[in-house]
Image 1 (cartoon, rainbow, N blue to C red):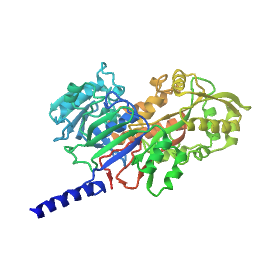
Image 2: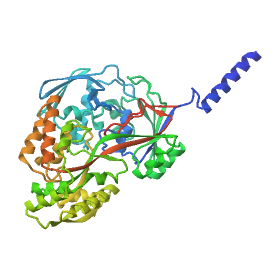
Image 3: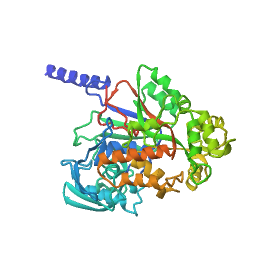
Image 4: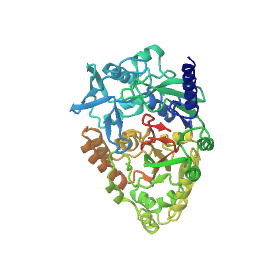
Length: 505
């Protein structure tokens, strides 16, 4: 009897010891230091990066992008067919459960897509599926979607976080899911403390097998310096949105691993094509020869990389040959072009920018000094972000700086909204209206053959780069920093990540 009691006591103390010392029985909890609080936990009703990061752990899309080669792959879907340019037949994965125990099937996809498109729901990214004309359930695991017109971006749009599939039963029970998320992802919602944190726990019924982590915690830490300090002390396990000036400190810390990768976001200098002299290609070429992009990159602390095209290297539609179109830094050539355009003594203009981030102002100051060397005297005008968006929208600007993130990683999702004439005065803030460019852009949108689209997007990229529809200054380098005991964490070109493959030791 005494021996049995002794064995039981030893077992209890061993269990407690292992749990307290990080042994095999310790709960694996990963904490992420998040810069901003989520707007909500419904992929249908949110459109901010903080919400997307959280929702991506709990919800899934039909298709996804491979983070290594950027190719589109099935996720909740198994495969698809396009019998014609207007029809998409999608075959779904079987045996998938929502976190509430209900089945994922074609009816759930139809419900989600119809809800996303419902005007009364007012989903901010309803445009992702705007080309859909009809959705028909063929059987429990097969859907037929028809589009109004051929849509070359359709598959890419189905990889977007905001097209993730929600549980119909959960919507019926909770309403909008903003505080009660229910998806099919590897983690399910546990609790949310407003302004502080969101906790998710492993979903053991996940179709891909249980995650390695028991829990993940998203802690809201607005100040970048505080996030860095908490990473150093181990209060959080990883962070992103890291200012360049903090990098040397993190890279010198043996307990922290910093990972850099090329991203899709691009920062560019553009022009108001409805104002003289920016409708003159010779003037735009003069500016292109006067701007030394290498000088700008030297101020970026390694957070930017150079590529001349409108469609960047990590975006579908890019081909390396585009780099041959780069305008070499040549002040004499810039002066010659200005003289040829009718401005031998240069001219005065306004360079618009925003104080929403330091690099916008810094880049404007560098460009101001550079173009002055060829005779362009530019006054810098700085606005806050909201006023800046208004000014660029209505065409008040002359020269201006802006950026584009390209979350679908498809060149069509960049050139059509920004540079097609039909979008002038909305997402086309340059008021760029070029019939030849329109034809090239439209060609990329009306074929579903991805190999053909690659060539068509490259042709559009070539034309827009030669015409200097905008001058790409730099493309973003994504950075993530983590404790060295974190493994399997990988950032995609659009700066997102999944915690399903991640482990912590």
